[in-house]
Length: 258
Image 1 (spheres, rainbow, N blue to C red):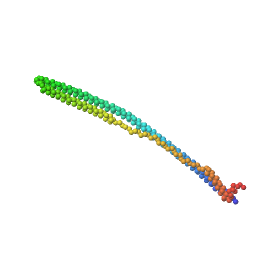
Image 2: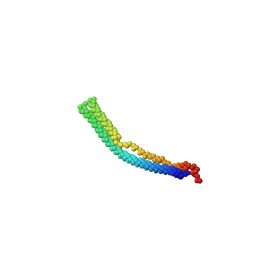
Image 3: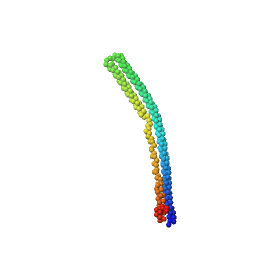
Image 4: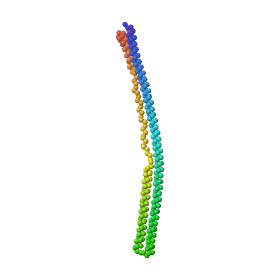
């Protein structure tokens, strides 16, 4: 005889099983939505950080470009200034060289004129000495080889003086030539010693490196609704089976309405 207790027990068991399945599905569904929200928040944070890194790299790159431009402008102005300085120094050295060349040329002219006067004076002195010797010999009535020897000695002395004067003149000209060569060498050395500041080449500016895109989080699977429905149906079937077992009926009797 069925007292109804079996039906109540079977109903409670079925309700508990169905409720557990529904609650478990709800908990899984809530956890999935919370995980998706967390992943979306994490991706948003990573995207913001990536954007900040890109902006920072762009700012640094622009600063390096600006600094490089200022360095190039400074070097360009320095090269222009040094170019003007070298040009002015070269002109000054050349003027100084030409002035000293002029002084040497003046000395050369003066030495040539002095040598010419000395040669002329030596020639005049020789002619005068020969004339005096001839006059003295004529006055004393001396003739022959003695007079000629005396005149030859005067001429020889004149020639020796002329040779010495020419040697001195040649030595002076050589000295002036050497001084001119020394002036040219000194001017060349002065040009070589003009200080010129050089600059090392500016290193190329590296562009910002690529920033890796944000990797998406792994997708979160939703709980299987079909499995939940199957569990509910299974719980119902199990409840009916439990009722049939506890009441001593067959399954066909449970679904019979006679």
